[in-house]
Structure formats: structure tokens, C-alpha cells
Image (tube, rainbow, N blue to C red; front, side, top):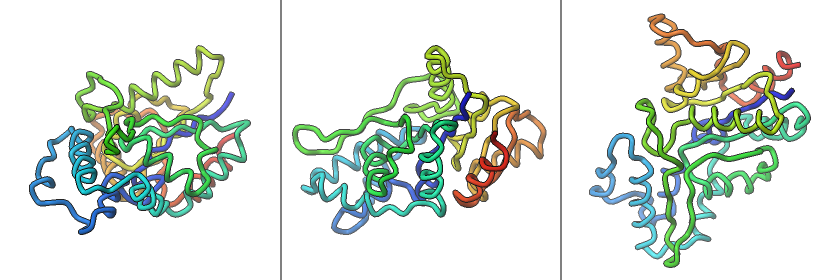
Length: 241
């Protein structure tokens, strides 16, 4: 039986938000004020679609966008973590569940030659249309009231584990590594043998601390905060057999 490592991407694998990083490819490296104010809560993917249309209207092509995205910095120790996972594939599977998009994640992983560490990526599909405009779609539909309309990470994680079990792969534990508010929902499907690793000082860490303080909910998994990929490697090396 293997251990499944689940990684968020923005502010977890990379030390920034890939969606906002793309704005660096515009001449002013900024958005028009009117466009900035079109975001509606829970509808980030639709908002990014408008930003991509704006970038397309400026005549910025795929090569220029990719060059900018490949400069996103990795979070401290994350390249080492991905390398560690690649070297221990007999015991570790690794998936990414992210609210970014397929192209950004694939570009950034390939730029550092880290794509081999990841078995599967679950995120919003992105592609260039006939005009050469970057286009993004919602990953799926769901009924979860806690999550943005385009992605429920708990639904994705549960579905993946169920499919793996059908294929004869049973995980002895899940290690969920994230930072954001939308990483809290999937922690509710984790078991006592599982581990949730929130990035210290970020939204997920604060939410879990509030839950534990109020004792209004019970989190099944063990909580192990992290500040760098080295912390995650250390935990796996000394606690996973």
C-alpha cells in the first residue's frame, strides 16, 4: 500500500499566485481599473477568463505568456520535495489539486523538470483558441456550498481515491499539503490515519487553528504545519513506513 501526497499549487508548490503572475506579461504589468473590479466572489475562473481575453486583445501570444509563467518562483524546498517524491515512487503517489489551470501548472513544472513527480493534475482546463487567445474553463460542477463554483477539492480527492481503489490501489494514508481557504473542505474527508499539512501563517493554518480553538468541529487527520518543503520531506522520512 502506498501513501498519497496531495499538493495545492499556488502559494504551496510555487510561492505566488500563477493567475496573478500572468499579468506581468502585459506592457504595464497591471490591469485596467475597470477590469480589476469585475471579480465576483466564488467566480475566479470567470474573472480569469476576462483577464485572458484582455491579454489576447493586446496581441500577446503563447510564447510570451509561457516565458513569463516559467519565471514563477518555487516555494522554498518544494523542488527538493518533488525530487524526493520522484525518487520514492514505489511508496509515494502524488497529485495536484489546484484552482489554477492546466497550462500554467504544466509549464511551471516542466521549466524545473519536475513534472515526473506528479501522477495526476486536477485543475481548470486551459487552451489557446483559434484566435490565439488563452481560454480557461471550470473544472467541474458541484453542489458544495463551501467551495468556489468551479472546483470542490473534496469531491476531486474522494473521486480519485475511489477510482484508485477500483483499480486495486489502496492508500494507507493521505498527506494533504495546502495553504488556502479552499484547502479546508477536503480535510473533512480525511481519516485519523491521514495528515493535513497547512502552510504556517496562511489561511488554511488560521482556519484549522480557529476550529481547534472553538472546538466546534472535529478534524480527524493529524495536523502538521510546514514552512518549507524540507519540513514535509522530514515528516515523510521519519513518520511514513
